Length: 337
Image 1: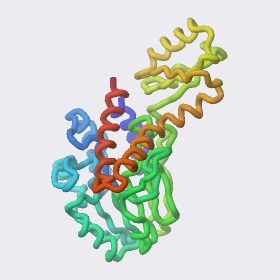
Image 2 (image 1 turned 60 degrees about the vertical axis):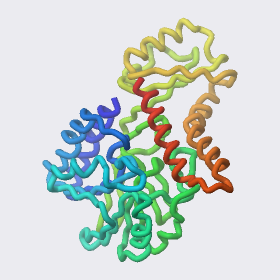
Image 3 (image 1 turned 120 degrees about the horizontal axis):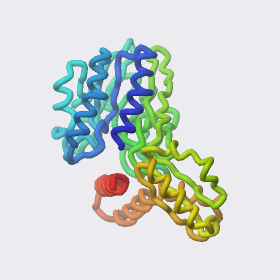
Image 4 (image 1 turned 45 degrees about the horizontal axis):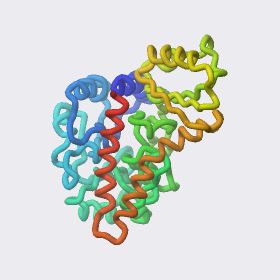
């Protein structure tokens, strides 16, 4: 399901856009894979066939960074899911050490996920490197990590004031302060990504202008159900293969039989259907609750860690990374089960 959704984007939107715009270089800013601790063999097979092979066959050079989800350990990038794949592709270069490239006269510094053992080296690179644009897989304080949850740890953004532009992977929300820009991930990976802009970017090395390759193929969908819904007019095919949440209220549904028919028919099309009852709210308030729900878990965890680490020697960044792994695995089991 997740793989099929990603392949749809690459086949129908991403690679056609690269061909149309005569792109010859692709920069991947980390987290090529989602699971830190293992790599499914079928996932690897599809990734090679539908992603890495395509770059090679199209003659596109690839520079790729390690993200925190690509590496097994937290204190080193040495054990990762990227190196052994890149070894098969002469057009791929893994940026294991901070490095500067000249792309058509544009000086671009690239730096992978900053693990604890390479922290001093990485910070020194950021402070001294001579380049126009810096790209990395950064964790920078004050930026929105996922919808509704802002980073309260990580690197101080003033560290990057010396650069014209900074582009980063890692966080799932497209955001910018005018200098530092988080580019987000290309696909929805969990409910926290619902409603967020996904896709890729094209950077003009001459003008430094960016153009969006928007991913319009959603995986997660929400429906607000009331008795007013017309079964004969409803487009069930729109939800084929999707992960769907249906929201309803006690006031919005009196005809339980009709709702049962709706859910049964929807289930024949969708990958999964989850019914969410929202108590005594009016139906026009359901959407607000649905949006709030997706921000709550991460925000609550962040607030808890704030309280727990206050005045202690615990590293908030380490605890948040641990909880992020646990939450991701829980969401994966929920959406796949």
